[in-house]
Image 1 (tube, helix red, strand yellow):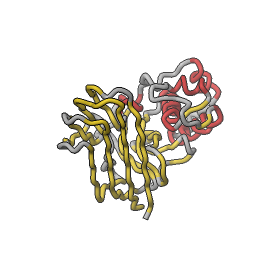
Image 2 (image 1 turned 135 degrees about the vertical axis):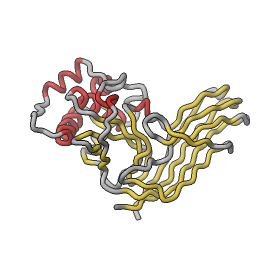
Image 3 (image 1 turned 90 degrees about the vertical axis):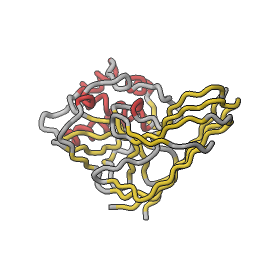
Image 4 (image 1 turned 90 degrees about the horizontal axis):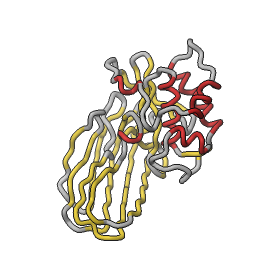
Length: 258
């Protein structure tokens, strides 16, 4: 078990004033078998009344609307989480994790990659995920800015470069093609930078975390924020606004282990 302190900050600056702003945030770590929130503080500017709820995947939502005119929107989350081995028992599997999505649908390139990888019938789901991970890392390189939030797994593989979102989408595509239930995870890991994405694989009634970007199993150094079928289910910030013009977003986080 580990005790992790974290800070997360997101700032969006607008070139023109925003008149009305409705938002939905997924920025609070989950409570689960191996992860518990010891302390949490969420601050949104401009200041407004925050409403808390859950989406259909159990992720924590922070929602509200801002009617004060503003040129900047900021979110700060500070907290402490205890974490353990990333294994979550779940006997009642949601079948949506078995099927391809817009982001994880296999095209010709992913099909060829899948065919090149020899998956033995005796391989368990975690071993298969790690085998796919090694193949992914042999075919694409990590390069910031090489893709965007709308890039699919097939497009990232054709591009030959991507970020953690793309590594995870490609792994999801291959696993689902192999008939293995899996889900997308957004969270944080020990260090500094931005949020991270990885995958959970379902094997014999237990979800196991696999990080394809770093070619490793997720462990106590990871904090889960949200889970879903792919990026679309786990976006940290979603909103509708009136005005605003051009937007410039910056994100920063720091996770330290006691």
